[in-house]
View 1 (cartoon, rainbow, N blue to C red):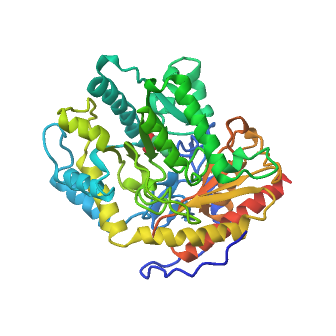
View 2: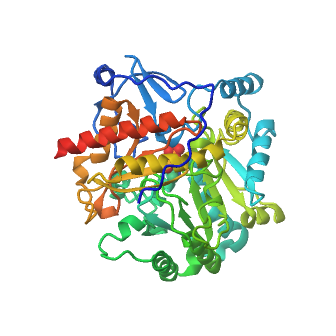
View 3: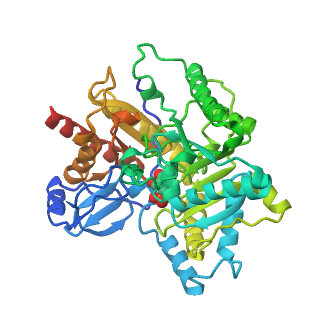
Length: 504
Ligand code: PLP
C-alpha cells in the first residue's frame, strides 16, 4: 500500500537545482570513455573491460564528465559520498591538517585529531563503545574485528585452553575483499576464484541464512507472521551454535541492515535482540559490520541505535554490539577511512589486564583520516543537523519510490531505512522468480540510468542459488534536496521502464 504523501521538506537555500541534462550527452560521455574494468565498487563480479565515461570532476550531487554530461549522484559511488562532493570546509580542514602534520606513527605520538575523533565517537555511542582504532578501508576494519575477537578469547580470557576459533556468518553477505574479510563473506562470485586454492579460511566460517523476509517467503502462499519468522531464523542460529559446540564460537558477524549483499534489507523487529541474547547465552561476541549502513546512512548515526525501533507498540531498545566496524560515510569519500569500535566487554579486559591489541598498520590512527572524519561528521553532518534530514528524507524517498515503481510488473520489492533504499527486480511478481544471473538485469538498469537518463544508482547482481535478487540501491547524500529526490526517482523509473520494455 502506498502511504499518503509526506509533508514537503524545506530545501537547503544555498544550493540550486541543476538543470536536467539531455540524454544525448550521456551517449557521448560513454563513447569517449577509456577502457577500464567495471568498477570494483559495484556488486557484480569483475567483468571484461568496458568503456566508462571519463570523469572531469565531482561537484555537489553531480558527477561531471569530460564531455560535459552531468550525472546526478543517487548512490554516492559505493554509498560513500554522504555530504556530496567538494565541500570547502572539509577540504580546508584536511589541508590544514596536512600543513601541520600529514603523517605520524600512532606508535610514537598521541595525535590531537585522532584523540578528538575517538572521544567524539565514544560519546556518539552513549559510552557503549570504549575504544577506537582508525584504519583506511572497511576490509581492514573487518580484518581487525576478526583478529581482536580471536586475541580476546585466546590470549586474554581463555589462554591456550579456549576452543573459540569459529565465526558464524550469514549467507549471502559481504564484508570485504581481503582474505579474512572475504572468508567471512558469503558472496559466491567474489569467492569463486579463491575457493579451489583452499586459501580461504573456510573451516572457521559457518554461514546461516540471511534474514531476508521478502525472499524467505518465496514459496509460501500465506505470509508468515513476523514473530514466527523471527523465531524460525533465531532457531537456525541457535542450531548452528549447538552444531559447532557453543564453546567453539568466537563471534557472530552481521550487517545490522544488509547493504550490497541483498540491497538495503532491515531486520524485522526482534531479530537482532534475539541474536544478541543467543551470543550472550553462548559466550560469543557480536560484531556489527556498519561499513555501509552506518554513520547516519540509515537515519541514526549508528545503525544499531535504530534497528530495534519501536513499531506498532512493540518493545524498543538498542542492541549494542561488542565490536563495530565503520567505513564509507565515515569520511564521506574525502579521504579513505574506516574504524573499529570496541565495546565494554573487550575494552574492560584490555584496561584491567593492560592488554594491547597485537595489530598495526602503517596508516593506523592516521591524522588525515581523523581530520576528514571530524570535518565530515562534526563540521558538516552534526552542524547542519543532517541526521534529522535523513530521517525526513526517508519518508519522501520511500514514498516516491513506491509511488513510481511499486506497480511495475518487474519490481518485486522496495525496502529501506533512512537514505538507504533497495529496489529488487523479478521476472514474476507472484512467484518472485529472479532473472537469470547471466542477463545482468541490475547492471542494465544501472547503465541505462546513467547513460540515458543521467542518474547514478548502485547495482547488485542477483543469484537465485544464493537467495538474492537483482537490485539497485539508492543512497543519495544526506543534504540532497527534495527536488533532486524527485529527479532521481523519475530518472530511475524511466530507466526501469526502458530496460524491461526492451527485455519484453
Ligand atoms: N563491509 C560492508 C558491509 C561493505 O559494504 C564493504 C564494502 O562494500 C566492506 C565491508 C568492505 O569495505 P572496503 O571496500 O572499504 O574494504
